[in-house]
Image (cartoon, rainbow, N blue to C red; front, side, top):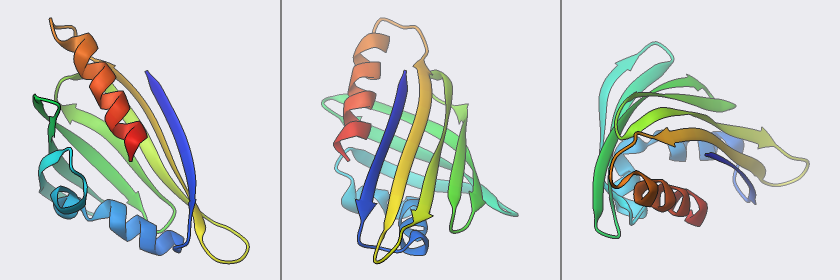
Length: 129
């Protein structure tokens, strides 16, 4: 499945980059995020685990994020209920005040009895934010 969503916001690319990169704060402002932990930091990146608690579904996944502040965050799956997940947050300056924030995700849920349900929930969760 692919998700490609853009929004214009009244904040700078640096501010939006910092917000998205503050992974451990996700449970404070994303109702579907039950847990969030940075597992490892390295030069220009990190590995983090996100716990999803959404409509009775509880799953977690770990990604490696490569950071190019303030322009983009590239993500790739390390572990979780996906057979494939890669994507990027892209932050672009605009003329005037604000910036464009784009989320491009490509993912496939691992086959299981609940895979279709989880895929639909994950897509709904991403689109709702």
